[in-house]
Image 1: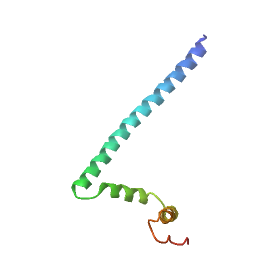
Image 2: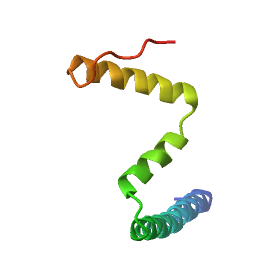
Image 3: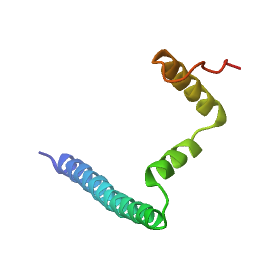
Image 4: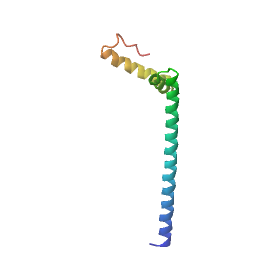
Length: 92
């Protein structure tokens, strides 16, 4: 192996190591944030809030109005087909 090839492999190895270390740091940060979120849900539960519903609210807030309306329409259609509601609302 020539010294240029060895240098190229060394650079690639250093880049690979840097990527792996960055990913490892980010994974650790992600774990810390997930633990923090879990703690906040625990606090909310301790104050009497329903965490299952709280998670649903957070999920809904991430969606735009059109996306929520479309999902609601499909959900109502399925519920109607299963006899769980009388009449699904009309699409607008």
